[in-house]
Length: 58
Image (cartoon, rainbow, N blue to C red; front, side, top):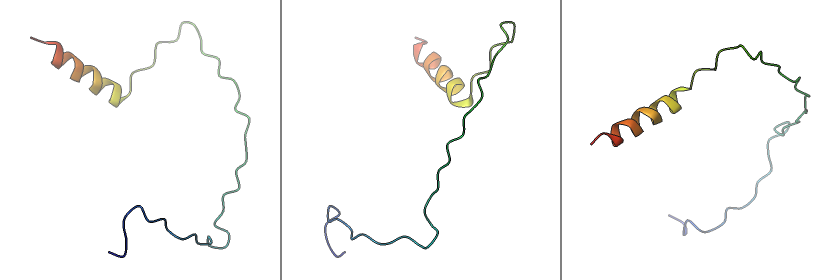
């Protein structure tokens, strides 16, 4: 080990062409029908619900 982890690292130049050129794209507005079914919850949400229901049981 050459120094503490709080020791700042020196700067280095990036590789040629390695920079990001961001282009902002206008997203069209999405219209959802009132009669459309609600979207299903993702896996993380379903797992959180299951975890909270297990903890609530006495």
